[in-house]
Picture 1 (cartoon, rainbow, N blue to C red):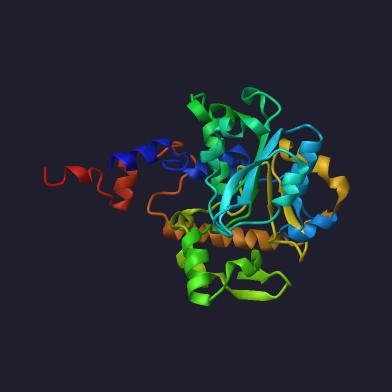
Picture 2 (picture 1 turned 90 degrees about the vertical axis):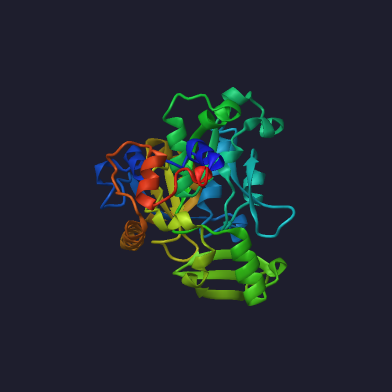
Length: 338
């Protein structure tokens, strides 16, 4: 129980009433709508490296332009583990080349907020840790977490400089994330006989989970529902498909093949977009209704799963005793029998 309490007290999402965070950028219409974006586009990169990127390559393009303009010193992104194929790990990219080399999506956790101890990246930064300016790319829940951390003048010890360094937050549209062992090990390797060394790209598109080989052949193409028992349990309760707390949200829903959907939510996001758009093929978002429809589905799923009240106006943090009351959790199991 002591370890559980530590998680609740220290994890930026543990006791967070995530819907309270939405007002940072989502305006007052954050419950029934899709927030209050400044503008929305369908866009793609025209450079050759886009072939290895996800959809239109927008996240990588934005990071490259921010680095080249000197607006950031690095970007906390995902890279592939050296030991396990298709296992994501956090990585601080400090050059455009590193961003391009790591373009693409990974469908498992990187624990990005746990890697904001900048001393581990000090050898890659040309500025002091206190002066570093970074971009963070993550799922909507990770963006909610960093916003919550930044909202308070607490001392985060070894993570202090990292928390304060995040000046650009980019969310990836997300309905579910997955446990690496269950998705890649059990679902793909054991149940479907896929050799992970043969997989060149993973994607979730149009409700399908896809694994694509080196030559473009489709190794797996099935309803993503077939993989739901490999998803993280907390995803069922999350209603933030479009990253309400981000500066920019990027995904594939609402745009045709090879294009990314881009939602600009803040002036900081608009700055990043304006620095990038000259090198893009872009136009107004093709299908806003598709984004809204999936956002609505995601909220309904979350509302059906939540055992506590959904209340954007309630206190930001939920006391563990209140959580235990709603979920029927035993608060002091270690006292049992004593």
